Image 1: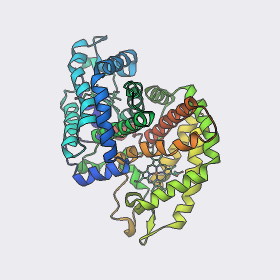
Image 2 (image 1 turned 180 degrees about the vertical axis):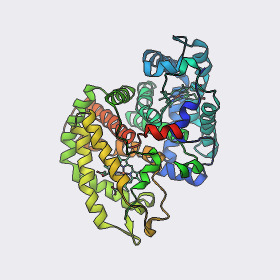
Image 3 (image 1 turned 120 degrees about the horizontal axis):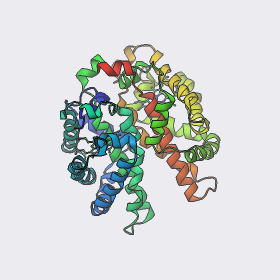
Image 4 (image 1 turned 30 degrees about the vertical axis):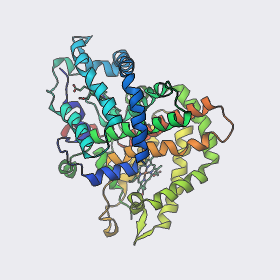
Length: 193
Length: 193
Ligand code: HEM
Ligand code: HEM
């Protein structure tokens, strides 16, 4: 029903999970991602887990209200409720994982599983044939909205403004890291393209 | 001296400047980029233009201090001062353009010129042969640092905190847009990969 191949063209082959620990450390350095960020993500995770259903409601409203997203979750011209329901726990799980997992190769393997899941989906059906592939540029456009969306929740539990700011920055870096890992190219295919 | 082809592997062909107005409008919608952001970017531009030299000093220190960046600007094991000096006005110009240009197809053409300039550079020399190509993931890692770096300057001119926040969000979106346009893939090559 949905075309998992859609992310594929962004990455030229996500099957290779060959992200070495060295690569991961380099990416973290470039992102200025530190142990302090891991601590603030844990702090953010406590807030966001307890608010996950509210956050997902907002994301779902946004997905259904904007055609550039809605058409990915549509069948016969209607929002595909079954499909949306199947995805819901996966979105929630991603929020928790992003905050609570140590940022080592285990975590990058979890992100690879998401990438892989897209990849393993069937090719487009007739319903979907006018929907463009999820280009890399589309993933990058979402870093801002996904970063910004959680901001109001972070200040709801009485943390100091500096803590809220640090949690927010850590979340921004973590979302970037997800996008980076989902678009991580296969070195073999890299050679050709 | 530097390998402009380095960005190329991120985009599978940036020569096509075939970003239609329709594509640009869609990308802006996905980014939640509005006319309000254009106004706040103008406001930010006034501050950042007057601070450009200070900002560039900080960026240059960062480039030289971190090997993952420094090696792109090195010749014979030393920072390549000539090359760094040649680039300096181009960095400053990009800051101003990002804030002060209307976000229409003229502006995306300016971004294409940057993309093109990378593309037109010679292939790596011996100096550079151990330096990895600037993969797409590297461009994405920089959205956070480049977004965050300008934050302290925005509050130096007595603007209200809400204005500072709005300027900062607009800058975040604008930096994302640059990265998106630099990695915009050629639809023809898209078909193959
Ligand atoms: C910052 C960028 C993005 C984030 C953080 C994000 C987050 C997620 C998450 C967490 C999932 C569930 C993953 C799983 O466990 O399988 C998902 C699935 C999905 N996303 Fe994204 N997303 C992003 C960008 C986009 C964009 C730009 C589009 C479309 C234009 C999109 C369309 C989809 C679709 C269609 C699925 C379902 C795929 C399936 O059937 O397994 N996403 N996304
Ligand atoms: C948000 C991401 C980035 C931004 C906003 C940015 C900004 C810029 C700008 C404004 C220029 C001058 C463009 C011109 O007018 O020709 C430039 C050039 C350059 N950048 Fe980036 N950059 C980013 C990411 C990176 C990364 C990750 C690397 C390396 C790992 C890198 C390496 C270079 C190099 C080597 C040049 C000189 C290219 C030439 O010789 O023309 N940049 N960058």
